[in-house]
Image 1 (cartoon, helix red, strand yellow):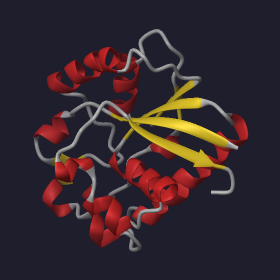
Image 2 (cartoon, helix red, strand yellow):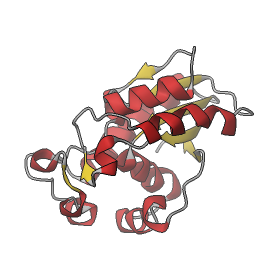
Image 3 (tube, rainbow, N blue to C red):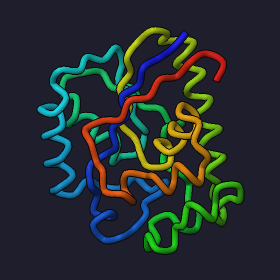
Image 4 (cartoon, rainbow, N blue to C red):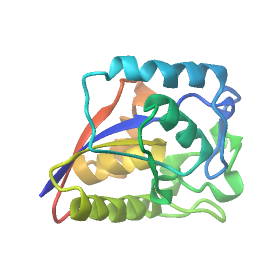
Length: 181
């Protein structure tokens, strides 16, 4: 049993441009984010997906609709960004993922909490989309959780090698979920 995933991050937001970490706030794509989202289909035209999922937060929904026009998109709240609690929409310098792997953000959740949500989502995929290719449009913390779950990285490794830190964006990341995760 396995499910192939191609993971896409939402386009740049106005919060990103203002150095803010949106968290569970809806967020809004900036002009650059709209342009990025409209260009992605040209970069992935050779890929076919059996289903497309996205976070239910506005910035991911908007990106998914632009990434996959005229296709059914399934919103799932388990794909939300980490809930930074009191730090939702705070200056990004204050949102230090490494400090909240096990301990929740004040009035929010921890990275392990995000991992728990993503593991639940993975079990759902295995049960309902075995041997399928799924597209996901979501956020940073869920992507890091996929790195932990599917690649066996520690949270510290996933955070340290995050493409956002090392400057290696690409049009989709491939993950495979296997039964018994």
